[in-house]
Image 1 (cartoon, rainbow, N blue to C red):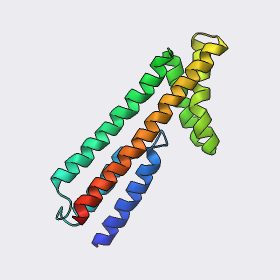
Image 2: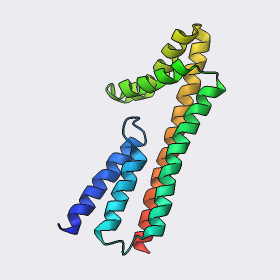
Image 3: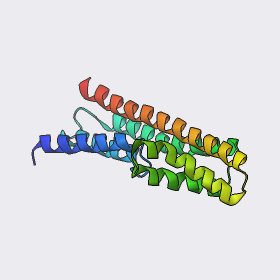
Amino acid sequence: MEPWVFYLLAAVLVIVGLAGTILPVIPGALLIFGGLFLAAWADAFLRVGWIALAIIGALGLFSFVVDFVASLLGAKRVGASPLALLGATLGGIAGIFLGIAGMILGPFIGAVVGELLARGGPAKAAKVGLGTWLGLVVAAIAKVFLAFMMIATFLIAYLF
């Protein structure tokens, strides 16, 4: 197959991966790494070698850690119950199908409903919803930053 086909597929994987840094169902960092690895493989690793790919992979792994820790700390800081965490996750997934507003409000509403089911009390549930949502937002921002660092690492290795 022609190298341009691999580069095209790599670009598609990276673009879908960038969307996945915000959308909770798509494994963004994994797709970005896969696309960048495919692009490096397309020219037999002549421009982008194993050191650059190891750095890109480490950034991808760190993205998973940041996602987990930021979400957990946001929820833990406000005393969220396990049901609130589950609700935030389910709300985020459901929100994908409701557009941008759903993606923004879904985790918050899910966390509030989960906390209401677990412990009751609307004031506590609203606080938990906000804390959980802020943790998810911080995680999304960090994942986007790390995704662009992965791409920048690839471009630096490719061009220099």
